[in-house]
Length: 545
Ligand code: GLN
Image (cartoon, rainbow, N blue to C red; front, top):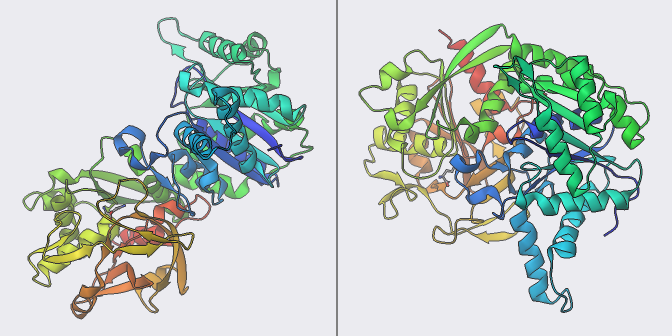
């Protein structure tokens, strides 16, 4: 596949350490270019061997982000969407595992006509083809390579960049290399050597960086930046610093203040780039210095690694900024909540949030928290598992169905409030089997689905009266419509439905008690927060102590 004539590419690599914020730096550059009026997209290439992150433990990999078209992707795609305010797709993230599996599939089919299949050219070509596909129709595609330069598994990706840059020719690509400039306390100074070494490593592979972004705890002096420029062989205005900031949403502004767009435009021949960041600046101000405050109990079980709830914590920031409110999260480990201590744990919060999850561990504690919010009339939002447990709790306590359960926790339950349907239509309109026993990957209801909102419900109010909304899913089980009538007779009404599936429920006699089968956090953006989360926070604000 040849690269489309006019798409330009920015390859973002990292050196020294991982977790330096390459994703945020990439998203920030993308945001500035989009605000300058260009058609921009962004892609993450992950060197690990899993075909996708869908089956990885949240403890291993943080959150699995779900795109509108139902791909289970790296959490960096969440950052990209939140910054860029664009829906990305399965073309915007792939792994080494995905590359190999498609090359092997082609080999089995005989597509390579008996040739010996090798990393160069077959694997590398598969990678560049995917880069080019994601760049189609765009002015600029930003490609972030996971991991750091020097990793064995990252080499085919770097080779793909090297080869593609030659093919593209002048002014059509640039390499941005992100490194760490550590402050060494004993010496009392910032050290540039790790940056020089990592640029050396990049050069050895045949890639010359055009811009260096330096992560550092301390500000970099002009002399130090110039030293990095000279020792690494980049122009002086191409050394950009990325200091620690209170909020990640400040990074585009910090980059802009250093005039990052001038060297990018020179490198890629993009002409004059002007941006208006007024709205963004005001939102960032509200993120950093909000007027109001609410305290939300976040009940979950992966609290050791908050990264696994990344989209949700970011969505709370977006809705908070919109309401000029700081969201103070009280992290509550569901395995430690019981009947005895629930009052002590939740008495000082303004709202209770039960996030999504899988498996039995911690569900009893979550249901104690739900019951507390229900009976004490504290605003409650239950997401996915949080909705399913709200129904089970209500069935047990209000409807008196003592054995109420989910098939996920008891396969043979006599009262399957939450059950498994045999088949469903996926977000591409294809019929899919959904069985409990099939291999873990790929059997879930994934991606964006439209649903109908019940008129005059609380849900309808928070969506400003619209009749339908599209939200993203990631779950295997469903609420059982067999119980709908019983629930509604007792005041728990179904306020969202699609094709006979229950998508949202709410309590009639409660200031705010909503459960949603979908994940509102996946569509929240800084400039466009999700109404369900904003609705929940404004109810909590009203209830604020
Ligand atoms: N475990 C539940 C299911 O598979 C809920 C999933 C979730 O909360 N994302 O249906």
